[in-house]
Image (cartoon, rainbow, N blue to C red; front, side, top):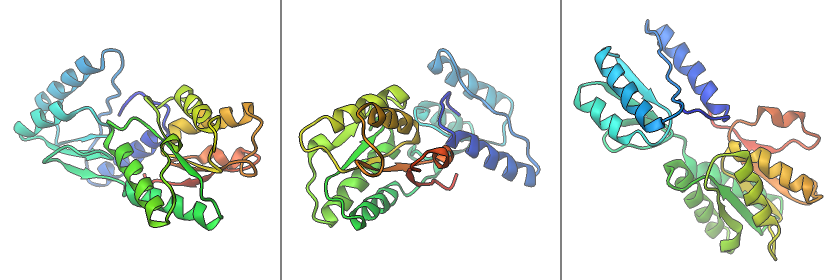
Length: 226
């Protein structure tokens, strides 16, 4: 799993451990830090040498290591991203975004913006595609300024991207945030701009937002079945 503040990975680990225990397996957890590229190579080599029964990889960027392990007969499963020829378990990202758009359309919104994470990540690309497809299906204009792509999954990027989307002329009345790691930054931006959710801006987040219930105005969220 990656070094990240995204709570979804903790839920992944809980599910993996439960299923492994029921099947009579133990789990070795690796969370790379420092030189990530070097750590990936070291981890892949150790997993092969220790004859791991299988490897579950929960984030993008391991393509070369996945191929290396598979060539050595190690069974590999990827979660929420795609590597050619490798088994995978993924969320239906386009449909998740469709649900978000449908929800907002039913509330009467037509200027619906989106903030996604980096589109070199397959799941983020799929979410952007799903948003665009759903907007077209409802006859809504696809305005480029309303489609904001964050360069990283951080609070700072969520803040900066929200400021960018909400300070333009013709700002959105509703905003879909494609990653829970960006939501806190988006909320901070709305507070600093004196906006109230949902009165001034309807907000839908995709991902685990268990803390949302503690807010004065809880955020609508589409929860991934982690």
